[in-house]
Image (cartoon, rainbow, N blue to C red; front, side, top):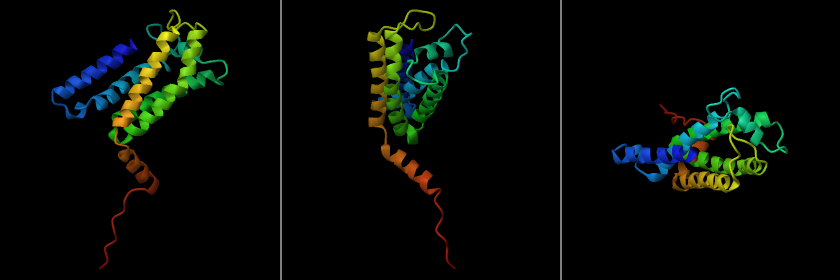
Length: 177
């Protein structure tokens, strides 16, 4: 399902680009938006109550957290928030570079949970555990898309934004009379 969301969104955004929507004129910007769509879908599971059974839910996510990670419940909420923030950052050109780096790091940090869930046969969404041969390439795909977005993004825009936040708004030069 995640592949369909990511791939379908990518093709949909590129189609919009081909139809003249300038925002989606490049594959990398379309990929950034497609990854954002996928993240909104996957992050939603972090907040869905366990009583909801039509999609993966918070309980499924908590079971995936390896035992060595403290506060599994809070970690699931935190990673959901980080995914949503990353998705928002991907759609804004000035923050796309930083969001891509942050998401690539997050995807790498989430890999142990995916490996644990597969090796420990943690059921996901009431079904069987996702096999390791599927989980690792899936995570690698997310990292690859995030890195592609970073490489194609204007890091200068992120540096300008950081500088502006650090220095504060520009003040007009004083006029002497």
